[in-house]
Structure formats: C-alpha cells, structure tokens
Figure 1 (cartoon, rainbow, N blue to C red):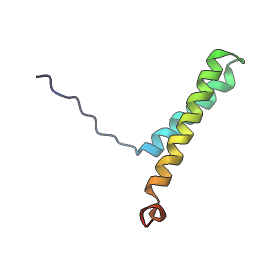
Figure 2: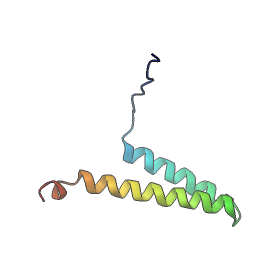
Figure 3: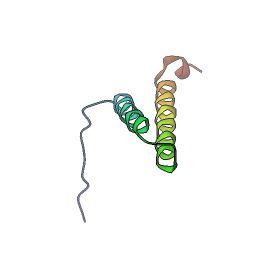
Figure 4: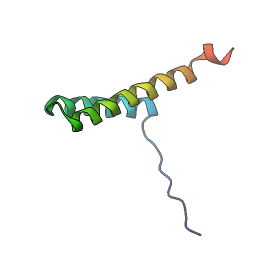
Length: 65
C-alpha cells in the first residue's frame, strides 16, 4: 500500500485564498481581454466565494442557530 503524502499548512485557508486572489488580480491586470483573462477572473470569483463561505462557517452566530 502506498503511503499518503501529508502537508502541514503554515497559513490558514483564508490567508492562502487572499494571497492567491491578489496574485491572480495582478495577472489579470497584465492580460488583454480574452479567454485566459476570463479564466483567471472566474478563479478570483471562486476564491472570494470560498473565503466568504469560510467566514460564514467560522462565525459564532451560525453555530447558535
């Protein structure tokens, strides 16, 4: 049986999403309008949605309902 590779994350998911989103925004600024830029913009939207979802799940108000 093959051993599973495990990685210890040094940053939280929110930090990694924010950092990745900032990098993607910089890339999108340098690209002309087209398919590649649309793909990056879609990834930015997905990162923002994931970040928002993490906020909702970790907020104490959601746990009390």
